[in-house]
Image (cartoon, rainbow, N blue to C red; front, side, top):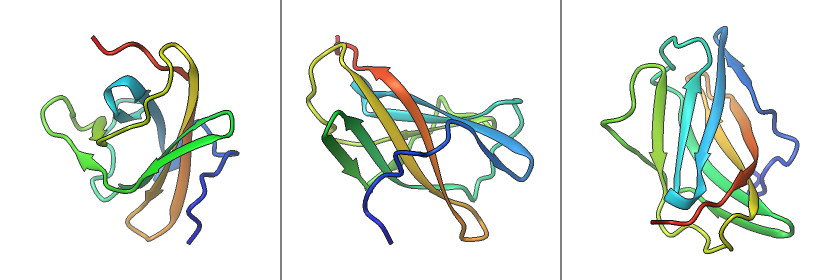
Length: 119
């Protein structure tokens, strides 16, 4: 199993005819999976690793916590702790590794996310 991110990961993923996108909130150490058509995401879909990439710097984590509350059937939120301390308003790419209920591995990306200041 590779511990390097897939820099060529797509920005949309189709699983069981569902189009899935990723939203990232790097300054909050949070990501969100979203079903593009508002249909429920498979509950068996698991986030196994998250990478943030900025130029030659790579930060990754595989301790990911699924949050409850804001998530609904068509979106799921995930939280990580102790994210990178990169300069505010600089861009970063976020890549995640997912495993579906059949054991298949998928990579999904969202690029050029500005790291906003934490208030």
